[in-house]
Length: 183
Image (cartoon, rainbow, N blue to C red):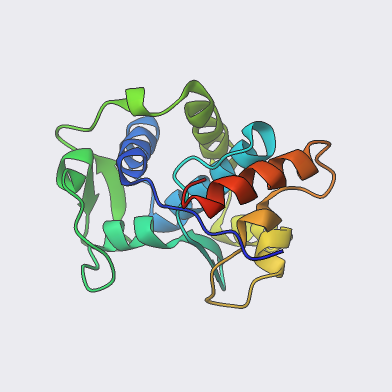
């Protein structure tokens, strides 16, 4: 199978970033990355589609949604500056790691489906209280991370659990959607 590639949904990414910042203010980029990855993986396994369809990279500490990470870092050499980012979230920089806080005028969460919000909330709850090492260890057991080369994109086909009873159907839907540029 060819590696599945999807089209990133900027509007949903900004809404999801704002949603996570409102639900759990003060998270570091590491935790935001793990929340997005886990929510995306769980959503694909339950509903057959990703939430934001970012490119997840297999970094040494686990999966990282690359575009979202560049947004947080304001790395405009790597990605475009999305309109509304500074309204969606505020990144507090200073002593220690950056913290993601709600922005002054976040986009409406209505762009997110109830299933999107469900998986984001579950990922936030799952990550709550876990150390960075614990979350890295968890994600290092996932096929999507194991099958990717370090610092390289992960394959969305590997997000689908082998024991998922709907695996074949989900992969078929994802392949058809990827052929049209979206997941």
